[in-house]
Length: 429
Image 1 (cartoon, rainbow, N blue to C red):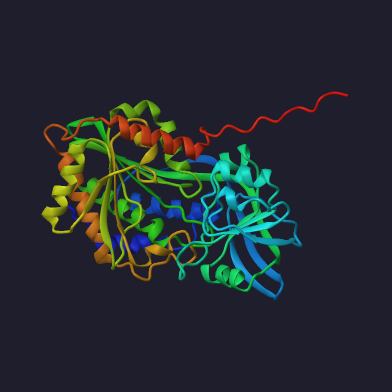
Image 2 (image 1 turned 180 degrees about the horizontal axis):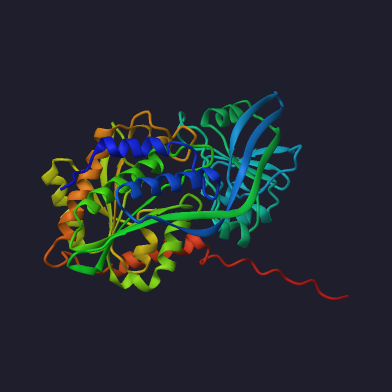
């Protein structure tokens, strides 16, 4: 019986330690590399393609013009739009957290906020009030700028508003020194491209129509190798499939290494839609998104029956690993499956440099084979237990209150909750 090898997982991890942003050549390279590892383990790995919007050649900066002169580098908020090539020269207004009471005099200005959540409604409010561009910053003084992107529905349904993120210390200096006039540049080449999922299957020996699906996204954000998030989870799941291929379980195990997660769960949504007819046979989804940190904490987020939660909690105690197990909607590729009624658990290990996820500093400085194996062996033990159980240990059910949380999450992701304001037509004459 093959056992999980942290060394194998780390070799897979190193092989994809490059930028893998959605629908770019780097992401395609990562997908083909992972498929190669799976084929080397005897699996029939395939790529399932789909189209998404992405962006390349992104650059952003803020240049203070008054009352002092200094230029600060920033990170583009993807798919938010562009300034003119020469930039936008405007007055700067500090708007705290972006709440409406701070937006009384912002027409034609660049606004700087301390990490306001850019919801559909907030973007619409900023556009309606005539804001020219947005600068955000997080609350961690040591963290690099956030490189996350808007979802495609947001830019289509609300509109574009050029946005960038800067380091906390730079934003602090601007406010302390009362920066009043700035030139903001946001440049990105927005385009439609092809992403892909890497899929494979090991058919069950006794209950082949009962399916457990393993998921992890392998894409990164722009200008980052996405070491923790989520090259680690992808490497773990690829190594797990080698173990399953060596000794198949009673139940079928499918793998979906998903592309395009960072811009809106595109890969897992495509998989759930493409395989919609099979989902009634899916009994469980296991997701691994962030793992491998030497300094870390083990967590598990369950979207499903309480019996699944307590099973995983007991296993954590058995392993002596102190797993913190909670019932929650974990924001990752498990969501499309749970939204279709499939119970899910997201098993993660965060800590250390995991604080730099979604930045260019998300690398492998504090990841090693031993700590990849901590998560991998836990998942493999769990997978073999449920995959070989005489009867499946958990009901295929999700509590009503959790369904409501799932619905709210998906509506926010896709903008289904957002109702564009009605525009009054001018009266004739």
